[in-house]
Length: 260
Ligand SMILES: [Mg+2]
Image 1 (cartoon, rainbow, N blue to C red):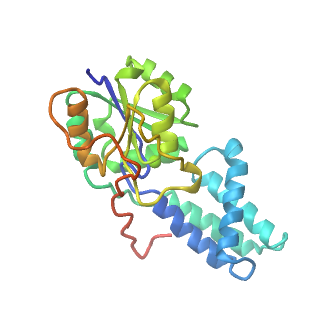
Image 2: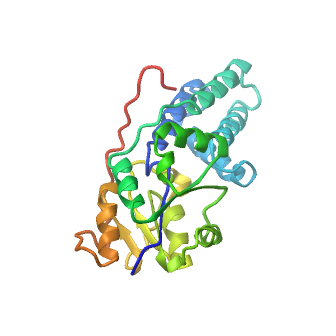
Image 3: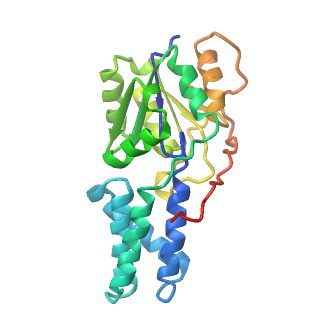
């Protein structure tokens, strides 16, 4: 078998992402500490995000609006303008956060790009994802960049077709079973889970344990070997996943004092 297309997810696959959301949520909890317990606030914020996804899509701006909506809700309409201003400021800081590549991200893309068509496939806001890709320094390595509003089987099928790849010869690697693995398996492609310690609550799903085209690797460092093994070039240790997934890389992100 030859794999014609290797897809990479971006957030929390190539670079840290969720950690910035967690930091912003901590700040959000502080701002509204007089009105709600952190756990209750988190639950309400998550509910707002879920309600709003279909309207705002994925990304920081929708998250900011959901925080504002939640602040209005928990204060019964009395949230001070100063707090709204702070929420907007923390959201804007997220749009400027530095890009910290995850271990092996650059080597994996560089290595695979020599023999395969490598495509970045990410959901989120166009401007923000473009900014992060530019700052990552990985942009030139990809043969294609696909920024989509949702990762469905139809989305993947269209992307694979656009790049001339039969689904059976396409592989997608990412940190989300829900977005990067399950819909790709449904198209007939290979889904490789690269767990990250932090995963957004709305981006979780049960692993398709036992699926013949599902694999789990501990980090992107194992991806070139896995691709080689699937193509029959070399043996590879990573394999068919068992009931427990390999634990992810460290979820720690270096946070400087000027971070949100
Ligand atoms: Mg991701």
